[in-house]
Amino acid sequence: MRRGGQILVVAVLVGTGSLAAFAAGLVHEESQLIGAERCGGCHADQLKAWQSGPHAKAYRVLDEHERNDARCYGCHSTGLAPEHQGVQCETCHGAGRHYAKVLVMRDAELSRVVGLREPKADTCLRCHTQDAPNIRPFDPREKLERIRHWPAAYSPDITPPPRDDDGS
Figure 1 (cartoon, helix red, strand yellow):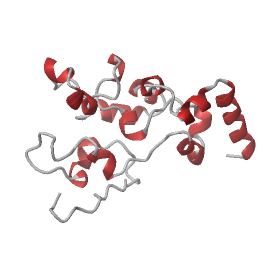
Figure 2: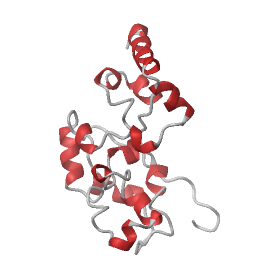
Figure 3: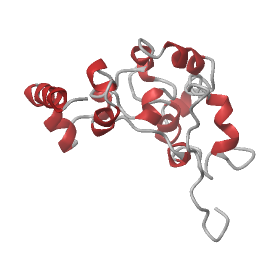
Figure 4: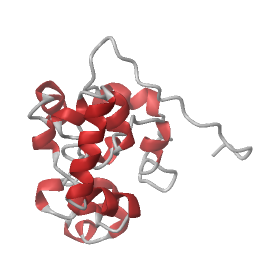
């Protein structure tokens, strides 16, 4: 993207007060979410793959008690609003309010500057911890196919971080 386009986007964000609130961390995360359906407006294949995968169903597997327990809800839902239930795009890729604009998404560098994240193994391991109710230890590389939603030519870097001496 040419510099003029970047200046225009920053000017728009500053003009609305969004950039200052975003940079200062003063806005509630929920206000930054756009939801999987909106992401699917441009990423229809990815939305369809997500809808049939385990992350879309993550909130529905919780019972009433678990839905009110932050230890459960925090990993089984992207936000508090009903339209953000389940592990949606923004759980792994970052809240999309600022990067979802077409002008921004056309510029990979700018989209990352305003919040788009490329998931790594640590992204998975925020929720898939030793304390999570898993039968076997979670291996991001092993589970990747269950959530495949990227083009075949792309291979995400999901190399797990080094383990501690105690094997954890």
